[in-house]
Image (cartoon, rainbow, N blue to C red; front, side, top):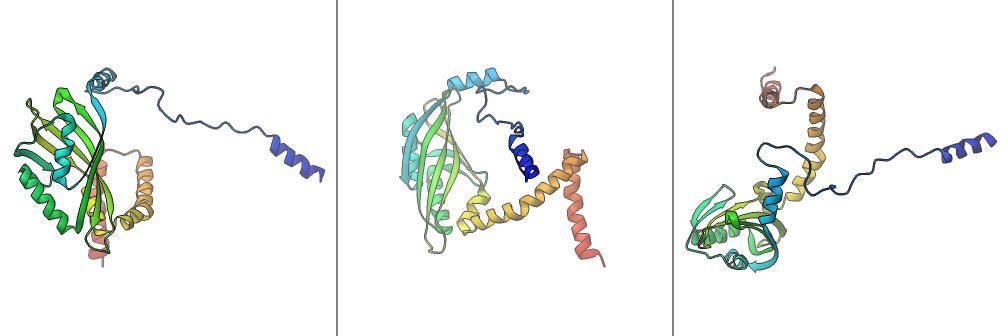
Length: 235
C-alpha cells in the first residue's frame, strides 16, 4: 500500500514538461524576409496608397450587381469591355457578358443568383480595384442543393473612369462540383482517400532527399507507365 501511494505521489509531484506556446499572430505586420523583387519598404509604401473600404452591395442578377458595385468608386460602364471569365471565355461587350450569364446559369440548373460584396480594395495609382464576390445560387431542380460560392473580381479603368477590363477568377472544378451536387462527396473522398496517400508519398519523397522539379516530372512519367505495364501488358 505504501509503495503504491509513494509511486502515485511521485507521479503527481513530477514537474510538467515544457510546452511550446504558439504565437497567435505575428509580432510585426511585416515579416522578416528577403526577396528578389519586393521588400518590406515596398509593401509598406504600397499599403499606404491602397484604399480599402467596407461597402455593401447585394443584388439579384449580374447586370444589377455590376451597375451597383461601380457606384462607390464613381466608375462608368461603356458598351465595350474586355471581360475575361477565368480564362475560359473572353467577351468584348457587356451585352455578351449578360447574355452568357443568363444562358449558362439556366443550363446549370440555377434559377436565381444573389450577388453580394462587403468590401473592396482600390489602388488609384494603378486604376485598379478588386473585391470578393459572394454568390448564393438557388436551383431550378428539387434534387440539386443550393450553394454559396466565392469569386475574385479584378476591375481596371481608364483616366475617364470608364471600366475597360474585368478579370474574373474562381475555382472552376469546385464550381461545377457544386452545380452537380457532388461537392460534399468529392470533399470526403479527397480528405479520406487522396490526402492520406499524398501525405505518405510526400514524407517518403522528402526523406529521399531528391526533391526537385526533375525527379517530380520523372515520377509523373514513370508511375503511369508502371501502372499500364502492370495491368495491361504484364502476362
